[in-house]
Image 1: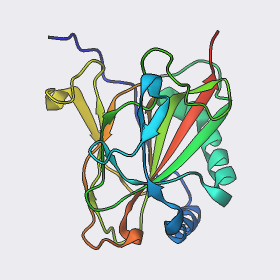
Image 2: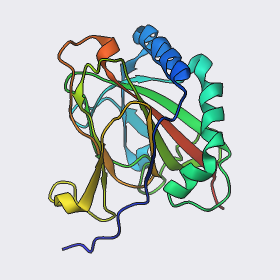
Image 3: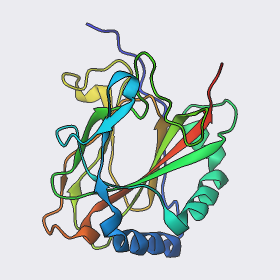
Image 4: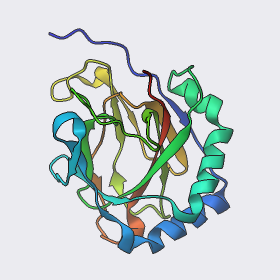
Length: 218
């Protein structure tokens, strides 16, 4: 039996955006429905390719934040010490922030994974050349009344096998309105299956992935 490590550092910031900014972001995201495409997963040696694999990840992905990128960057940097402390990081400040907006509808999920590829010659997940992700922060927002259920984020203890570990070896974060959850990018986590019976895009579970990136060593 593998020796289990501690639970990854993690933290939650509720009421992350003022209501007016959150509602404006939601309105924009819903209006961007046609720009969302099926999300991909890393594959191949060192994650150097990506492909659609609905068994592993079923979600819709938007490549950026459009007019809200500057606003979100400002809000994240204003909480930077709190976010870094939550993720257990005390190194140099990040050089950039990478964004990915996801929408989870009926049956959407993301199997256990980490946010950086592994293996020989692994590809750096850089926002700018020479960088790599080191802290992941996920921001949740959605229409009200809430039109979905499920979709909790499950964070696993270091060394735990998601296929066989017990409840004590993971922690669950519900996708609460206006919540930000932070943890190390190399911590294994999953998105549990979403139910969205209406099928309407505005009722989806929206999650903004915010990856803090630093310069690679060496």
